[in-house]
Amino acid sequence: PVAARDVAGAARLAQSWGIPRHGDYASVLSSREVEAVYIPLINGLHFEWAAAALKAGKHVLIEKPLTSNAEEARALARLAASRRLVLAEAYHWRHHPIARRLREVVMSGEVGDPVHLEVTAGFPTPDLLSSWLESALGGGQPGGTRRAKMDVALGGGSFMMQGCYTIS
Image (cartoon, rainbow, N blue to C red; front, side, top):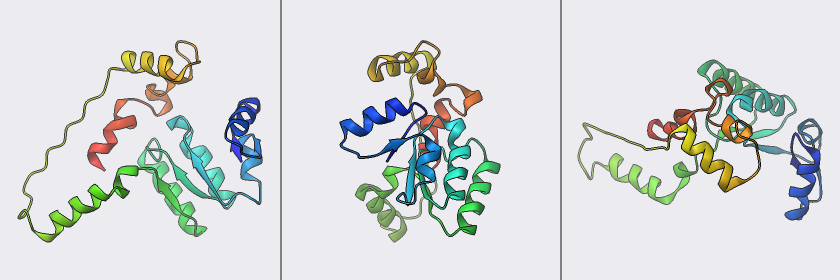
């Protein structure tokens, strides 16, 4: 099923992809047909809906960052473990063959013992990013949900969106 705050939006998405069912978040979590959920919501909603999914007995794949802070992350990890459910953060690069090969090379000693690692990342400013998101993804009002991705109060911001790749 497809879930959304806007059930009509969920219906449109479900229809466009040939998915037979849709509903709001609570109805999808209460469905016995659903074993796992993917949570791509605004960062500040990750904890609330991941906890709800785990409490409903669902495995959870959640977009990065897992939560907005370490306390919430530990709480989700404890909840998942207590219910023997999978809780995974959606870092696709970790499963890429290049990442696997890099680990093999480093761990084998082929390049010697690493003594220094420096990682840099670039990202557009919040205003440029918000403008790009508005035009690329469409919809939304200035200051609306697209801008929320950069709102620190909602768990957003450059570091929470992309900077986490450099430390993962």
